[in-house]
Image (tube, rainbow, N blue to C red):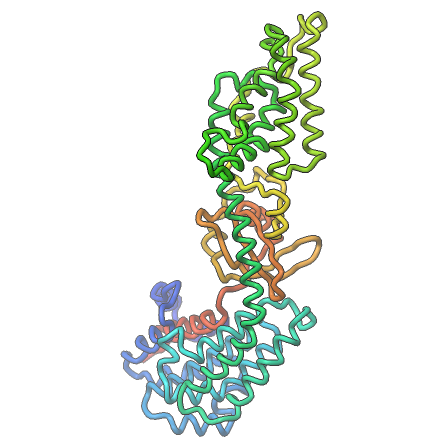
Length: 473
């Protein structure tokens, strides 16, 4: 964005102009045109806008063809339209988010856009105007590439040059040539887009399944933590119940089609496991403990397998659980000892289990969605500014495995907890919103843009409105 120099305007005038500029322009340029059209001595403003163009060599006066267009303009509206297009192109040409070849391509389109401005003012008032859509698609898609050496960039540029050539060199009497160029490009983009949509659909299905399971698991966790005996259960066992096992119970309920209250009997197993982990209780009924141990371990293994729990994690929990049972069976050696980790836990200690609504993806879901699972950082709080700006269609630069890559936000879950990104080559990655906030706080995720064309037009509107206050009459 290129802001105008202060000139001789006083600071109060500039502040008043800034206050009048909306943060998001609707149809964008008409706001500026309407503002300046109603002013006296508006011809002076038009000349002032022209002098603010950052490069004289791309100004209307620097080219005989552009000067001819200017002479052909009828009335103030057409003259201002030409200036607005020229300013818009300048802003895009100097947008450092765009690579040089893309900036040059837009500059090559400028004569066609100028001719269009004389015959079709809808370019300014309709975001879906073919020329505006063409500019948007070119610039928006190009943000996917970090450099001219990025994989796929040369293949991206080739059809653009073929589409822009006829526009730059041909007659422009209406918007049809832009519509035709856009249709040709869309036809080229559609084939890989169809494959990408199938990938996205599979990824979204996996993420939605994980999110639904997390919501069900959260209710199970609340039930476990609400039990009076929860504070008497060793922390490792409670971690298991509030973590993997809550997922097991939720998965069973999601998969059940018969209407059973406790499919697999996994919810009922919570009672057995909590009882077996309290030697003070099991000492009172050794035969019951002996009868339940083998079936308990078998059911635990089956439940964990249902959510694709890695074998090493399953064995690690069994290894943690095993010492509790022999101690309970060996009454003499255990009679006068206490379990150190069964002391009542404070609220801060239990707070980690309140995060149970965070989606935990099973391996097949993580593979389908390219899920990046980051360790939870409690020090990173919600980032409202990031949430407001991170909308579908936004491009971000993401640091992953030691290198930067540009990727586009393609989907968010209904509650905003999961986000799916796709890069220029169709590579899919997904993260939780909390992980995005964490990466952003660590400088490993940067917002790039959602629409360079609208940004450029907004800058034109701000320039016009600001200088409408700056000019002395």
